[in-house]
Image 1 (cartoon, helix red, strand yellow):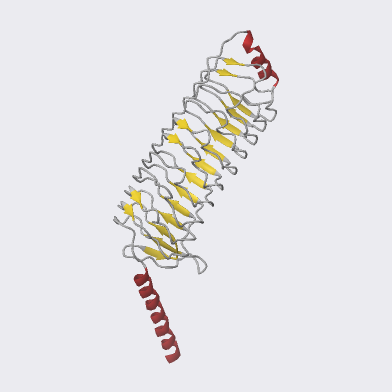
Image 2: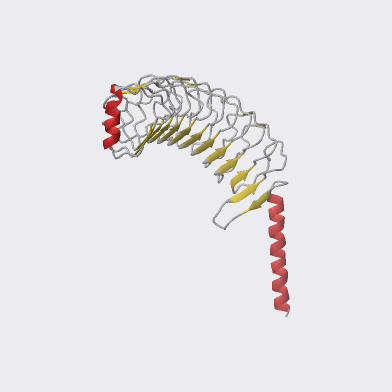
Length: 331
């Protein structure tokens, strides 16, 4: 009986020590837990009306959740010495700015989520000291602009999400410091101008979303460096013209979404470079004329959407009618 009682007392002591350690190590108002011994610590401080990032975060934290708080600014080294930290959630706060070294010190950081804040601008070298960052989420802010050096140091970044901002232009060499980018989402902005050199260096980009902007023209060569691009979304813009140089160089493009623009004529060489296209959406434009041979190089085309255009029903439309009658492409 005494051995049993001793064991019970030891067990209680161990539990109390564990609880004490949990309370002492976890920031006030937060919940700290591990899924397993192998996992890092998950620090959940969401929905606590916090005004700032907690000053004492456990050194073994791998994920910090600070979503739905009232944080307005992040100072330098807010996450210093958190060598195991991989994910920071700061979505749905009131953040209007952050120090360029706000995340420095978290050298293993892979993801920063700043979705749904009040950020208006991104300074030069805005994300210093996070060389391992792979995912950066900046959607639904009020970002007006950024520079060619904003993302300097993010050579491992693979996913950059910036939809639903107020960006009006993309400068030359805008993404020169992010050569590993695979996904770039700039939908629902106010982009009117794109420098012909905006996408230089993005040789690994697979997906580019420019849906719902105010783009009127795409200068020759603008997309040419995107050699591995497979999906391009340009729906809901004001693009008036497509020429042989518009999509030149996109030799691996498989899906092109171009509905609800202002194009009136498709020339026969419009898609000459895009021989791997499997899906083409050009519905709801102003297309009156599609020249003979426009789709002749697209032997792998599986789906094409042509509806919602005011075609001229004359003899110039005969080549399209003949192609539609013989193609295996689904309309």
